[in-house]
Amino acid sequence: MEDEQVTFLIDGEEAEVKPLISMSRNATIGQLKEKIEELTGISVCRQTLFHNNSRLFDFCTIKRYKFGSIAGVVLEVAPVRDQSDVNITVTCPNFKINVKVNPNKETVFQLKEKIGKIWGIHSNDITLWRLSRKMQDHHKLFKYYVIEGSDVQFTRVGEPLMF
Image (cartoon, rainbow, N blue to C red):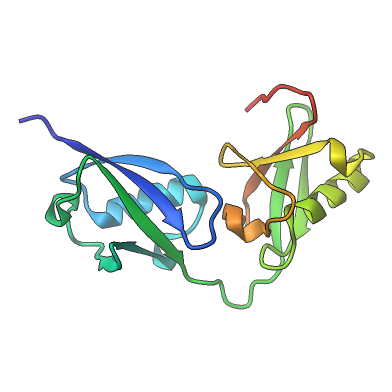
């Protein structure tokens, strides 16, 4: 019998990024968390997954939970202690800069203002992307899983996406 796949919609309480991840039913929840870490940068040790308000355990296989072919899971991320400011990279096709931000306090618009000052561009002409998702000005950066070392893509309004 062919190894069946389950596609997970990873949702977070306040997250704007909701990745889709396909996994073998023979994989473990721990392996699913590793995939989430690859996509978001959120370390496995900070992740707790829930389905229908029940915690999913790392050592259990996906097939143990009897998910359908598509399943929604909730990702709860433990806060990082003593980490207020983090360094992130903002990239566009021709430039790359490092910026210090506080994901828990700063909004996308505030990051756009910082970038605008550095590059001499009006913040209204800037569009930011994280994990292939367009970032909304009024949201805090943590809603896009912005952590130490995160990469945020930058485009000018009217330019095609190049990532």
